Image (cartoon, rainbow, N blue to C red; front, side, top):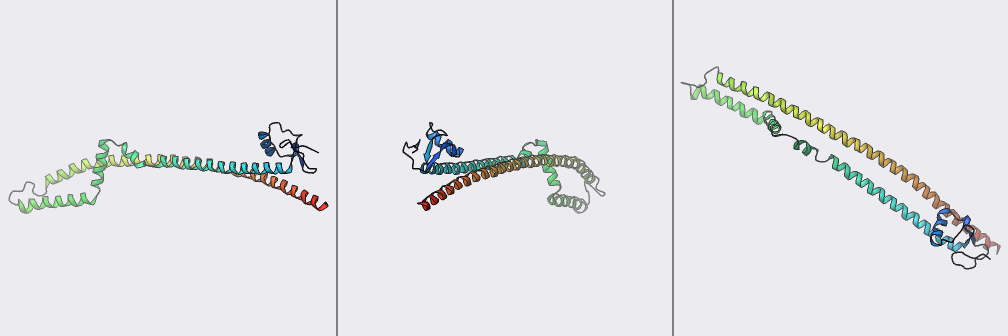
Length: 233
């Protein structure tokens, strides 16, 4: 009669399991608790089933831990991507000089209905003043040479300011394009990385599921042997 290396108790005939016949993962788990356990030693079926359950539990816990780690990696990737893409407009505005800010505001006002209505009203008041209010002695009689000079000067000043603002707008568009490119590139790399992680997880899960199925098959084989043994008795 064989003796169990774990409990040091005699093993009933037909219930002895040799270390050589135990799966590697379960064998290593037993050896972790009993370092002297070797491939030629024996344990009984009850002890083997106990370590099978412990091994299955460790597989499930390990699987949950890997899933949690991948979830953390995904959240970190999403956070990093958000940091890269936020406050783009603020970064662009922070790089403007005082003159560039003035040029943008002047160009913005010069292209608005407020400017058009205000300046058109100014011209009408100028003409009306010289025709009716100061009809006897106008300061700018027809053909309004002084008014034409003011308009020419305004156009001469406004044109380069608008050009400056347009150049700034092109620079803003270029910077936005660079930000978009960085974000798209990071997203592409992140998707590729996540895809590789998912592929690795699926392969790893399949291996774990196959190992669990093999252990369940061992259970079924032991049950079939026990049933056949009880039928013979």
